[in-house]
Amino acid sequence: MTPVRGPALRNTLFLLLASAGLPLHGQSRGPALPRVYLDTNLPEQHGRVVAVAADGKNLQAQIDAARPGDTIEIPPGTVCTGRFVLPPKTSGGGWIVIRTVNAEASLRRGVRVSPASSGHMAKILTPNSGPAIVTAPGAHHYRLVGLEIGVQAQPQPSINYGIIGLGDATKAQSSLDQVPGDIIIDRCYIHGNPTLNVSRGIALNSARTAVIDSYISEIHGEGFDTQAIAGWNGPGPFKIVNNYLEASGENIMFGGAVGFIPNIIPSDIEIRGNHAFKPPRWNRADPAYGGKHWSVKNHLELKNAQRVLIDGNVFENDWLDAQGGCSILFTVRTQQKAMLWNAVQDITFTHNIVRNSVAGVAFLGMDDTSGAGHASRILIRHNLFEGLGKGPGFLLEHAAEDVVIDHNTVLLDQGQWSLLFDGKPEVRLAFTNNIVSATRYGVTGSGTRAGTPVLQRYAPGAIFRNNLITGGSSSDYPSSNFFPKNLQAIGFVRYDAREGDYQLAPSSRYKSSASDRTSPGADMSAVRAATKGAVVERP
Image: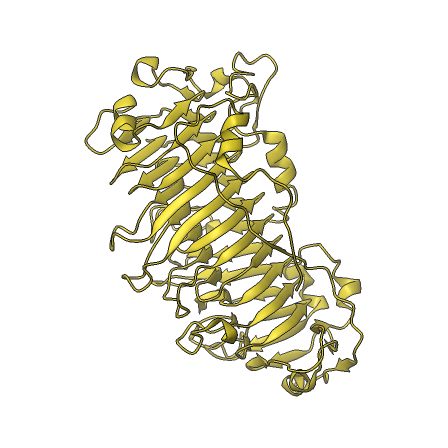
């Protein structure tokens, strides 16, 4: 897989603040973007086209015999049952493509598949608790196209510990030369079963790996953690673009378990255009509840990751269950001091929609169980948070450094805090040009009066200006902020709890009151453009 340089985006906080007309006040540079972006264009195949038998029983033999440049084709509807290993190839160059026959004709390139695509796909199913597809150490240059990959329904195993395992999460993978790489999962339907405990859709303990235009569903467990996609013992880069991702624990997570490669930090991660969703049928408090309880946590959690771009995604539905219902967590963890180098740093979170969750974003500057690790250089800009519940819009704990929260629209239906602080003070926080609700407590922290006193204690020297704080009082906050009576008084193009247009109307008195002379809140035209196509269907 050929890494390519990313777009020429502004990636320093100096440029961000300077363009907004804000004083720098000792702010350091902003988040670095991924150093590489993976090229997932289809390769030109010059080798053999190899057919798998209609009964699927020779799939592993064909994989073993394949040479770089070969294409392995499986007839649609063929069921291949077992554990299939992608081995390393030492001779020749190019890719080995494993695909359904006519996948390129029946499943359009660049278009996300869905369960309705199943009839056009060959099936690769695991009959037990192990994966359907795994990699051998050092495997590389495989592309899976147009396949249904899952757990067999009859007889159904009692539990499955992961459907696709790329790389090894154990001590067997303790050096970079053992890591598989250059793997693309393209237009695949990956799923558990409605009543089965499944811990993971894809384990990304690999290098140079992409998951694109795919659909991952029915990843859930009762009493334990689950993820649609998770990685912790592989270096990256990773590309996760235009997928439907459904899991009861975390829809996407990096970190969260011990990595056995010294100083490993998953790096250079691109997450764009995905729909991370938790179906209401899993929520015991929802009228649509289906009667089966799964342990629900959050949509996206980074416990060990760096240089991550999260842009144009929709994160939908989260509630109080195994966690507090916060959608996005940037919470560094050192795994009981086993990985003291862990960090969550250089994170860019832009043009996303977070919808129908208890809370918005939580930051943890250091692991409060070990006093180690660090979170730094995190940019939250031009995002819409709508339908948030009783939790905070933003929770900041334990000295996160260089966090910039700028130009966001945060609509708290019942939320009690706009910002909630705890633990050690934040370092160089900027909170600018946002639309937030003061709600019951507004900006608050433990043991301190809300508003300016909280900022002085928990974020000394913070830049806090040009925000619209509905229901707040100018006497409680720093100057250079605005205090409309309520959300309706802001002057949105259309304020509606379900289908609002949250751009400021030309008649709004706050139209050009941001520090960069634009409107406060998210640039909704940019948000709509970035998230176009992220939501294809809702189960």
